[in-house]
Image (cartoon, rainbow, N blue to C red; front, side):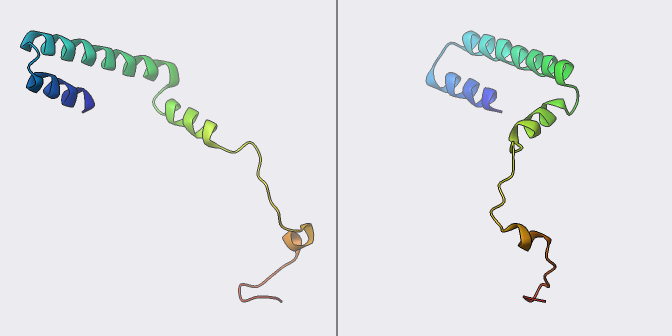
Length: 79
């Protein structure tokens, strides 16, 4: 979508029609090539899995006291 917007803006600014068409064809070809290359490298859902792996924290910080973690509590307050 961004590629189309850039194409329209270039055309409206007054850049030659053939330069705009050439830019659109080359850019769209690179975009399709990159998409298929990433699909071959990471698989169908692999790029999303790679992002999920990078977004997980390395460790979890829990600042509650240890005994409070193992003691049973009710939802309304103390037992």
